[in-house]
Image (cartoon, rainbow, N blue to C red):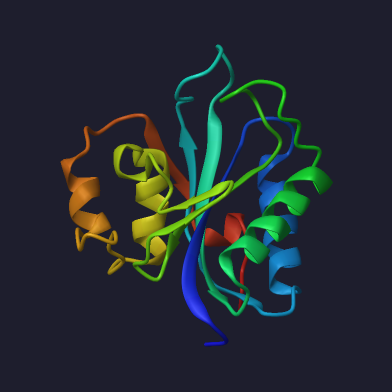
Length: 170
């Protein structure tokens, strides 16, 4: 592994989202200091918060990262812009959303970045793919994300198919 294990969540509901996921993951894999180690299945999820909008596609990727968290965040935000992401409305429709969900069981608080993602523990659409790629991941207080996922109400998340629908890091 070239660096610390971390996981990102991928989401979107505008345009060819699966293609946007694949392009973003290929670009991450080509980034010095970053390797895509595993990719979750592709999920269709109900929108949470925000205006009425189409369902989302979601996935997660486990990375080995030699960058520091703020450097990785800058890469993720640049990939969102390259995919046509506009931040016009909070929780609004988007072409690509890349969130840094988890970083080696650490807590990170920096301007513009909070890891673990602040609402991760209550969002099945993020936890389910995260647990798929990092089944032993824990929050900084030691709670297993797999256990937190089991405690969430079922519903709103449907597995569409294997990781190969998103990106194959092999």
